[in-house]
Image 1 (cartoon, rainbow, N blue to C red):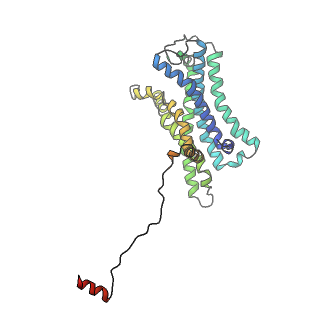
Image 2 (image 1 turned 135 degrees about the horizontal axis):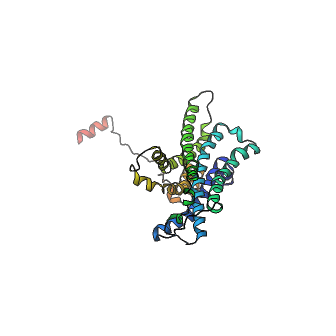
Image 3 (image 1 turned 180 degrees about the horizontal axis):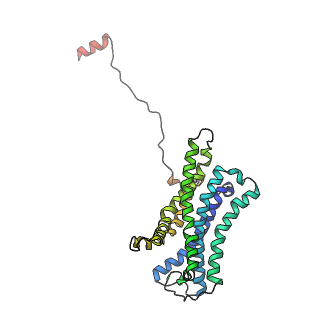
Length: 291
């Protein structure tokens, strides 16, 4: 990636999302794949199970937090870019939120898994070795985990993504306060693509969970709810592809690296068309009579 792309503020949160997703795919997805294939943990030790549960929980929650912050930050970068012009403003309104998005779930889950005593027995024949039960065994902690880590970020993604679409359309319709849409189109398209990906794969299970807690019968969409718990892996896996497709610079580099993906355009060449006109005059009349 070019240095200009790495230094662009709108790409920092995307780089963080892709980096966290790479760690999840390398460790969490590998361990989960081995578990589904064999029915046991990849390494049957308490240290591995605690690390597996921590990486899974921190990575998934941190990724959704980063997407939620990206939904908020796009409003700042597009409509209030003066708030990030100085180094101090950039630190508090750009870099610090990125740190907080990963630090909050990190502190919470490390405290629950390594500091707070847990009486849960390890089960190497379950996902995460049943280590995540250390969080759900306490009702108050489980409530905090469900609300702050799994319910609030999806609602932020939906609300601020829809608000971004409305603000952009409203700004384009104004005559006096029209924004330079061509300059900010890439940032809005990039964020909305990732937001729609998470809203379609991650948010339905969260909203269904809220509906269950509100009184919806548990027998409604039971199979979908059990399967949708793994949809977040698809969102994390598809995020780099969505980012690449939403960035024209990466699309150009992709076409350079893979020439067969380029569109083949036919060469337009001039073509001479011979027109035969009928002869006119006495000579033509005599020739017609002779025939």
